[in-house]
Length: 480
Image 1 (tube, rainbow, N blue to C red):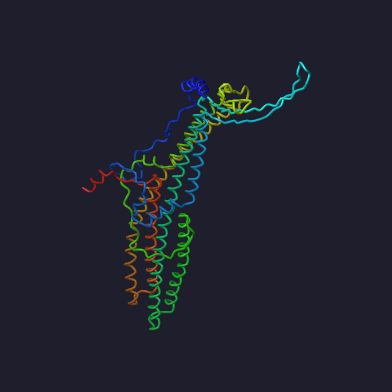
Image 2: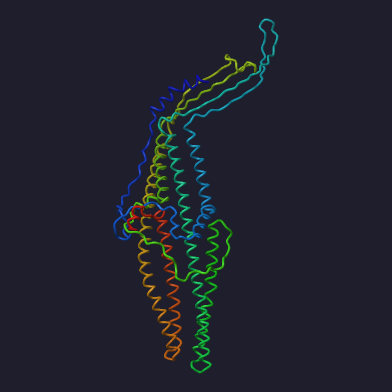
């Protein structure tokens, strides 16, 4: 057996010395569009150093959110599907990489044959029976002189990286979707609380109006209006309850659980606890952490390597074959040194005429690379657009919230004055109804805008590929 590999050594040396990859080497592409160092819609200020905050959802400081994220990561079916896809691509990568190594087989044969012959001296016909035994180890190896196999392995490895980054993209997407559902559930629970308080207030107002009517201080019209506004508030409760149930079911499915409803929880009516503000000078290179950008880059790398594969396929394929073993007419003499056999051969295969098939395949690979480059550029620009959009919306939402706070305070004061003047008979009940509806509208709008602010924070973290955190040295300076 050693003699075979001794014969292989000079040929392998030629392979390692002469092998050259065909096609362009991959380099990270640069966008034709100029990008700023910091995001245009970020708060102005001195740019600070940032470090990655992978578990960005912990900024909410909510144990329920933390546990929910764990459930999503462990049990979400979309994530499990993506993980299975990664395992599939990993197996394909191993198959492709195996083509770069020699293949070794094992052949075992045993047989019996008969031969008839005529004795030239006697003229008699003799029949001889022979036993044939053989044991051999055939081996083959393709010399990758043009880099076809190495570039195929490079492409498969890049595809594996792309699959893994796509899995990370799905993980981030599912986490963000689950947190948004959780926050929306809290918003609906607050809306239900506002609805219950409104029903109680309208019921008390109806009692007051009916009492005034019985004393002849008001008309039946006020009673009807008070009864109408109470019925309207009561009719909104089933819609809110159904929406809450749907959101709870969707959140359960994301966690790999059976869809089920939950009764509304009691929420703090001081509205949402908002996360810290986005620091100034947010650098634009934070989006480099986004897994979808990494996946697009890996796909581009794979397409680049496939150009080399297509180009190398236009050159001859050179293969080495060898066999080492024993063959004997007798089983007990099979491993006798005299029964040893071996052979080694080299051969090449090249198409003389293929009507331009290989050249067209190379042009197709180049076209696929150009498409992948376009997809990569679009992915990066869309990532910038998502971040800039989230930052712009955040500024407008903060401004809207500040104005709604003032709107709420004015609505509360107006309702107090309306009740007082109605009790003294200075205004009709329509004035009170209008003030009550404005007060409810202010509360609901404030709940809505604060949910949108939190959802915007989730969208911004996802658009940046994770949260952000100031370096510890910066944190100490801020404390000082």
